[in-house]
Amino acid sequence: MSSHHVYNSATVAAIRRLKQTTPHGLLLVGPTGVGLMTAARGIAGTAIAGVISPTTVDGQPDNEKGVIRVEQIRELYRQTRTIAPHDQVYILDQADTMNHSAQNAFLKLLEEPNEHIKFILLAHKPQLLLATVLSRVQQVTVLPIDRTQSRQLLNSLGITDESTIQKMLFLAEGLPGELTRLVEDTAYFSVQAKNIGDARILLQGSAYEKVVLIHNYATDRTAALTLLQSALIIMKRSLSSAPTKELIERCEQYAAAHSAISANGNVRIHLLSLVV
Image (cartoon, rainbow, N blue to C red):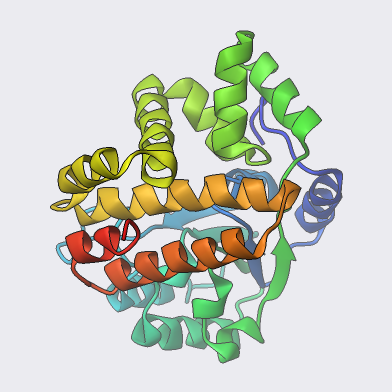
């Protein structure tokens, strides 16, 4: 684990236990930004033998839109068939991007264990994994940290300005990996802060401001999805402190628009449906 990374106390105990006795198949789950990769590396230690990550069709790394392909799993199968003299740990980042063919190929690795070969799967959406895969791995949830830990992490990373702290906590409270990224990548932080600002306009702006905003997002599906995610973050924060039927229905409306746009629906039409 990195010197700055912070974990929930239950997660710390789990990492220590798993580092001592790592199962043949381990699945770490948790929200985006909670630090699954750092936890996996902490468990694997010096035994880490490789990381399998999502790629494009031509094999280029792509953590945003890529998937783990069946060819990668077949290559992993070939690599792990020889008898290893000591433990070797392979990490599958975003394992939930494997399609059924890749998962079935990986299942063969789980069904034919090699004594010293271990696999750590990372997934934000474990429900996308086949039941047959889930039944052959030990699942551990990496829990978010609390607000005090989040603030302490930001302080340890050199963030002392209260306004900046509040913005970062709003964006990623409880998520040490995401908080660290916001600190270390100022351009990324600026983009995320703008997303929240635009989401507030979508939620609270005048009809004219909303239409202008939608026009700016209508041709960029990815940006539109991020905008809706930011709006949902704002509404869920409000729900936690003052839940109302109207707000719940509005959340459902925004979630439905997000799902429709994710499924290749018309961006402009679905965003405008939130205004009328």
